[in-house]
Amino acid sequence: MQTKTYFASSVPAALEVARQELGEDAMLVTSKPASAEAKPFGKLEVTFAYDPKAAPVEKQRVRADAPKSEMEEIREQLASLRMAMGKASTPYGQDDGDLVSAGFGAALSRDITVAAAKRGGGRGAALAQELASRIPVAAFEAKTVAFIGPPGRGKTTSLVKVAARYGIAERVPVRIFSAGAHGVGCQEQMARYATILGAPYQAFESLDGLHLTLGGETWKGLTLIDTPGISPADRMEISDLGRFFAGHPEIERHLVLRADARSADMSYVISRFSALGTNRLLFTGMDEAVNAAAVIETLISSKIPGSLLGTGQTIPDDLQEVDASRMAKLVCGEASLAAVA
Image 1: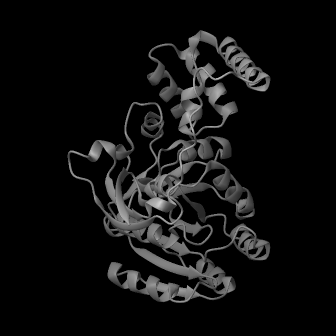
Image 2: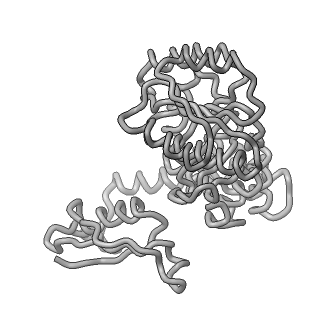
Image 3: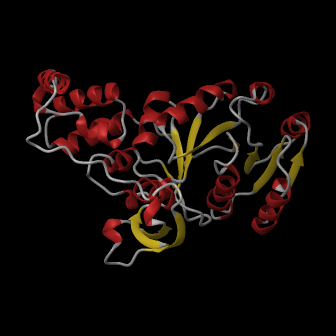
């Protein structure tokens, strides 16, 4: 066995590269913060063990002077034609390739690039300004908040961060409710968090019980509701929760998504949970995302305001409000992801 070390922003990113280069059997050995000198190459130093005999064999390079087949020449001519057409249709000398390579869809990239060209000024600044103007953002000011979404997205951790930052730190009374059937140990974990925070906690197996509690008393502080992780394919459970929220329009519904997911995956989840009347998007895992392109594209395409960003596991420090200008600069070369994470 041999070992090879990579510098990356996250372990999953390093694993993807390692398995491409070293083979599917590459094994993670160690992962540690990169030294100060190596930080520019990645915040983590990740080492893998692999069998050199099982590593993929590089494809044999084609000699530059080898004769081209007729089909190869046709492909090259088509590629050149597409490139020429793309340049001819992009005004003001602007090229939308930068946004596409950052992870944006071709149509949105072209639309943003054309609009940014009309702003004038430096290319990066104009793109950042155009992007920022399209990102819907809403400040966190709610009194009653429900955290919704599929399992494993960080709903519970986000709730605890919000309780600590917007409740305890601001001397605002906080109460925490769990609604519906959670997984094994989830309610016990939330109860422990509530005890640490000094916040009253109550679990409701039935939404009817929560409905009566919310309607029967006046609470002048912050109410946080932890809902069970629901599969986007579970229409019945989504429908039941949707009917509950329809009877409580005062509840602000934050759909929790992973920032390192693809924009197509985020859009799918948003569409499946649309019956709940989602009015805010909360993104976790910003510290593990390659860039902010998928988050920005999701906010723009869904038109649902972004509220908060989870940037790590530390409570409550790793929680930020969405800043449209800062997010836009991340994908326009005006700032690094460390500015958010």
